[in-house]
Length: 214
Image (cartoon, rainbow, N blue to C red; front, side, top):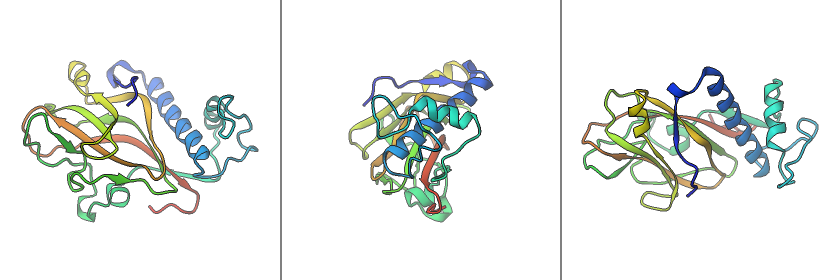
């Protein structure tokens, strides 16, 4: 698990900050997607390579390409859909947890998935960059990403700064990228017994142009 993982409450960010962060998340996703073969790096669009990783474009060059109104012709982007991307039933295509019954227990962010890990397809890359908990009282203390339920922690974010700032939304300190073919589990840790709650993650899903399954 990385060590630079914390939440930035939106109350402490300007609208310009938030816009810039979303562009950074898009740029990070494009850079990684092209590196992993999700889409094709066309050097006529973004010519500058990453000095440390010559098989992918430079991050700043990708960001400037976006700011200038560009988009890679080989990539499509959309938001994560629980029914399509996690296999939940069509009637529960939503980010609802299961009932939070035991304090200290991790519960799936998509209750219909249970503890089954989600598998990214070979041609899909996912980036998560923020979280919102639209409830008056926070019955959860942490947002977690694992390789499977009860498995290795990939990322973990303390949600309690949102309580202190009296906001329901926070941006991750850095975008969290899930590579193609990677399995993962998204959960929240119960700190107070509660009925199921909704969480709203900010995210982007990158796929090859014309092959999107949405």
